[in-house]
Amino acid sequence: MNCKLIRYATIFSLLFLSTSAYADVIHKFVVYDCDKEKDLINIKYIVEYNEEGEAIEKNKDENTINPWDLIETAISQGRGVISGIKRVVKKCRLSGGNYYVTISPVPGNWDLLGQCGVHISAWVSIKKEDKEIYSGGFEGRCLDEYDLDAMMPREITVIGKTEEILIKKGVQGDL
Image 1 (cartoon, rainbow, N blue to C red):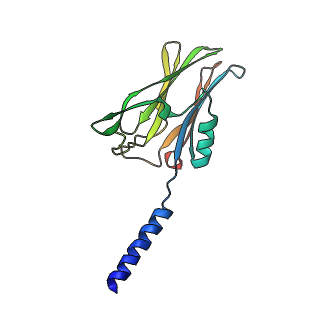
Image 2: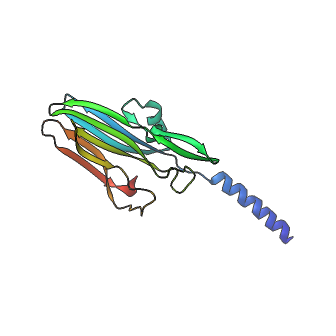
Image 3: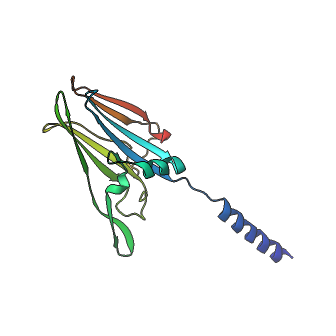
């Protein structure tokens, strides 16, 4: 009798756990906008979950960049690994001159099955002509001590006339 009860409890547990398990799907994007009329560049880091993220992915254009799209993968020793990264470079002519925005992925681990292998973020570098005026990431590194209270960039704006850089930050744990 006890064996029968244990067997049914085990079957019930397996059925319950397999049907109730659900994980959010995280979608991350860098949205670039060169607005010549307003004389500014605006770069936003957007994190959406599930259907909201899928909708952005489905409707994205050449100025909405998913960091995963910049990753090249391969199989090495039976494991998925990142074999290379691509960068997107955008040029914007504002009243202050030519600006170049480079958007790069920041993988959590080059071994996709390793710790933080499914984590990705992005990095942006902004140059005016040949001089770098801003460089930074949108999230802390997954393999480091992850400070959920850290204030990280969410939106970066370059104003052409004054060459000022405005950075709006948000709490990393709110992603």
